[in-house]
Length: 90
Image (spheres, rainbow, N blue to C red):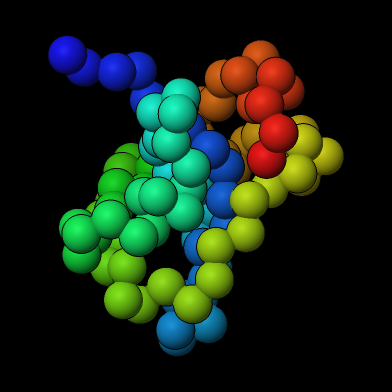
């Protein structure tokens, strides 16, 4: 059975100090921490115009964006389900 995934907007900082704004996809019962700690070496990371694979070993920090940041950055972030984000505590 396939479960729907939700895009959680984050800022990912890599070890070379580059920062990427995009989304990490989780199921309703999953946390971003669960995705970061699973056995996969790469995670799908959705940008505004495409999805890339991020090497988890290169990640230094992942910040979950606030609703205010999401509103300000809607032209940079991928399409989001704002109702889902507002209904959950991030």
